[in-house]
Length: 378
Image (cartoon, rainbow, N blue to C red; front, side):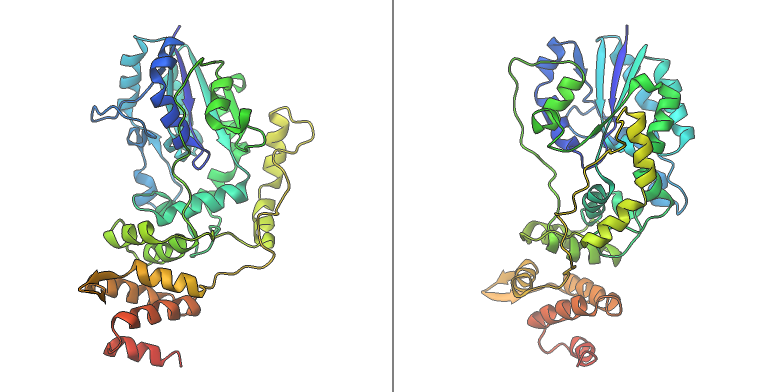
């Protein structure tokens, strides 16, 4: 009997950590009868989210509803591999981009042509917490989130058709249950208080019924960006500066204990949108109370503070600096990009705009264009 376990994310639920764990322990898993799928379309073998097997082109090319789908080549690769082992584990959060009923139906039909049993596994987080983490990904290089989400340079995205579809976990559960069968679909809450041993890897092993007498432990990876990284790289992203050395340089050099989060009221308002769907999902999962997630909002401040403090200012200055002959230097390309950002956000975020302009003045104290712009702030 040919079996497949399809771990579909979601994003920001420990997927990278789990994938690395499975890859590092694939020999032990094979002994237990589980084959960790680790192939890329180009023939490479390595751990990762296997996103290359999913067609994301609609996220980038369309303003309409996202219609991501699995590439046909994956079904061929799975069929070839299914001949060798009883149970294949395919893990990729890229599968979470598949939101529409039509493509989930296609996924089901094609997988059932290869496998006798297909088990679907999703880990989910409370929507406000999830969105804070996932929306923050848009400031990183090579992320689809910057194209998928709509909104300003704040902690939470604007809810549109795409984000509502992604965050409606009940609808996602209904679609997958309809085509794969309710008994073959598992939704688990990603929370250290509910995960087995508080660990995503151990929880997943228990879920699929595996006990490893010995295993290689891995540290959590793909940590969230901090306040400075998200704010500055967010402005880079909003200004059309994607996938370049400037964003990478800033991300690598900015360190901060602060994180970009919404106010308590904003988070509560965001979560209320999904109140009914979460209740219905809880009932579908056999939770009689209807309480899918906890109700704590203690992690959020009562009031929102997006201002840069003196430490932030100095950190930004240092991140944009290059020491040449003991003099602070900023190349013309980077200077122009930061100036563009400052001008673009002047009306919506005047304080941040002024902060960036003052930083640029450190590099070009006699800059004619810069000083003319600064006169408008006096």
